[in-house]
Image 1: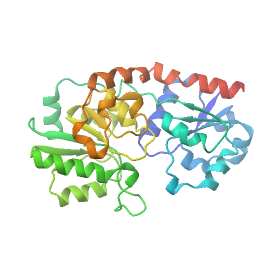
Image 2 (image 1 turned 45 degrees about the horizontal axis):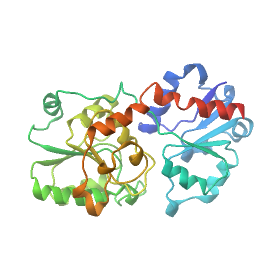
Image 3 (image 1 turned 90 degrees about the vertical axis):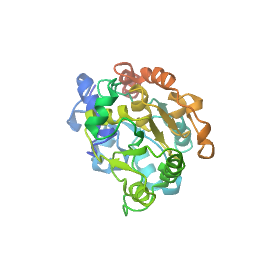
Image 4 (image 1 turned 30 degrees about the horizontal axis):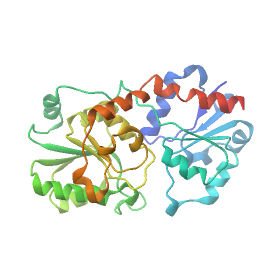
Length: 304
């Protein structure tokens, strides 16, 4: 049995997942679609780059991360659904959404986190010097996009940049040592607002995995403020690197974080970080256990 995973080339989480799979599952993987028994549509938004003849001839596993029903292309979904044998989702919340769209089998397993890439670094002081921060800085981080790619100005509201901004404004009033650490694509909206409110920040845009892990390790707090979310993978990355994290109740938050660390925007002030709880839960999804959880899906779809 051989598996082929479609490409996206965004230099972000899905590319890392694909690279891990091909590195750690060489015996069941192929880079040549014509040699594959199973096509794993890891990036469904570019599924049309896969020749239809292969989708018809082979078993098809498709991953979905979340559904924004205000921007849902029903025709595109059901066209792909006609080829799909089974689905994979990375959170129970997304499984509940997808159950209303298809009768095909759905398995919910969060993506693994590679502990060789994301881990705790004890010497925070040296890291801060290396990355251009002072020891007294109170650093709040966000490494997720917040701006619509259609115009690179409008806020991507499902990611909750307005919620993120309001929390920053309120906290900056109380703590003038607060600085914001940003990474990732499409951060134009939040950058424009931080400049407007004169909240200091540093933007690293697209960084390699080594630097991303260092950015997690300098933070006093990582914030997830999304309204709709599949993962985000940042929850696992922050948890396994023992980065203090608080999140809205989206994606895998309730599966990884302590309930005290999950907040509603109006009651953010009462939320509490629980590093030990999140770290312990994240261990279920480190390599090899985390990636081996997917063996059952692949075996089932191949044998069915």
